[in-house]
Image 1 (cartoon, rainbow, N blue to C red):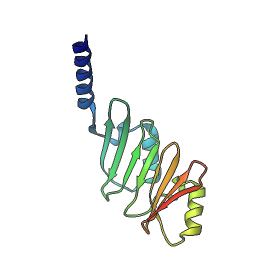
Image 2 (cartoon, helix red, strand yellow; image 1 turned 45 degrees about the horizontal axis):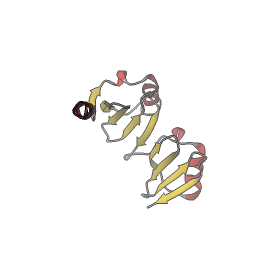
Image 3 (tube, one colour; image 1 turned 45 degrees about the vertical axis):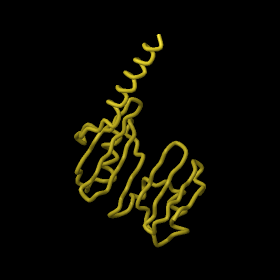
Image 4 (cartoon, rainbow, N blue to C red; image 1 turned 180 degrees about the horizontal axis):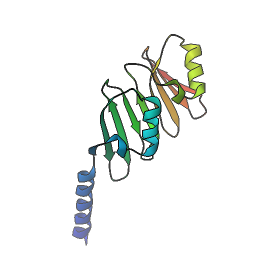
Length: 145
């Protein structure tokens, strides 16, 4: 019985390893509809260098990399999770108003060059290299330089 359990654990582990880091290039038209709408709304003038789907046993995400090096990541439903705009700034309309106002008030001469979100918080990176983390109530919880 112990050998059978051990064998099953080994088989499951090997299948998990085989499925891990399964990245595949896709066409922009294969992205979830929400992601396609997001791209045409906020990055219409950007040329896509690569769109890819990353999947594992428990998740699926999408990355879109533009020819200028900027990048957008989406979750399985097409909601953005990260936007990196090293050549310009993150489109202001995707940044929550409270975060925009905080940055404008406290750092008037800088741009938001990256924003990342999950269920609990937002993290923004500014052009002056500061990283500010906001909780779900839009309160500052951390500032790193």
